[in-house]
Image (cartoon, rainbow, N blue to C red; front, side, top):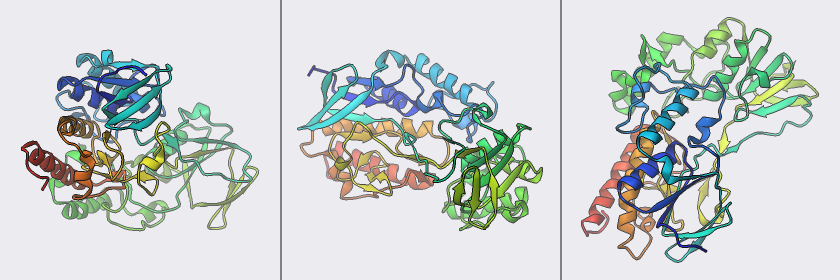
Length: 418
């Protein structure tokens, strides 16, 4: 075991870079390990047609906006370029050890033992986990199917598709993007399987990004009603496209799907709509309404699982496959002390500013923890909201962060947590 700086950051994707900047600016001693050979995390992968669903001017890190020459909704490659430019401008890369995977965390009194792929074990006072929430592919098993199957996380372009008949399972943002990508290739007959109905939101209204409209400053319930009215005017009713009726009409109570191109290609006959899958035999897939079709490729746009391959899951309390967290989704609920999460939530809207705000609060927590005997997490577990969701209405997360910052401020002044 070797001596090491006081804190460890796991991952140098967008969340990890936000943490590195905050720790460096605060003058704290730390190491950051990135398993791959480059910064940027999941933005280095993803499909070729991937674009942000949030607008350029509000999607950058605090104090480092995206270039005005970028389009309104930057592409995957432009976002990667932005992350590299951010890291270079802030001199963050020199603080990252690339090509080194964190393999195991072991709890030690007042700290952690961190074992890495270079054969070293180092002791740290605190660990910041920034490996994201899209780590593991959530891919169902379809018995009897003999065609090509791949998860959306492995899809890059239509070159990955075998044959000419493709079934995209799932209609979240990735499923819509991939179905549209396939539909725009003339050789592919594309079907999207939608098990549960929901609303499809346009990226813009009257040429303006939805996230920058004045209605987005309304209280959540009023905002919900106003936005639903604009969606109805802008794209109509799901039934107009042969889509299932939403289980709920409230946008607050459903994950945001920001894509109107899917609707465009449905109306042009390039994307067919099917319900959930019942069974499969060879290339034949039967759906829950009794209809069937043959497909050479199935692309599972069925989301991801939260995974920490380096951490014993028994250290955390889980609900619905996600660790319970408090303090704006930063601290594990009644978990081991001196463990912090950056980016283990997705408040609706731009994500990079979320990482900046979380990292800034973590810096304050690290300093506060130095003069506390008990784990800081205990002060938050006994008061404040406990969160198990990844997708959060932004105003809900902001209230959680506001409350956490008030607690830290009170404790910094030497008082009890309110």
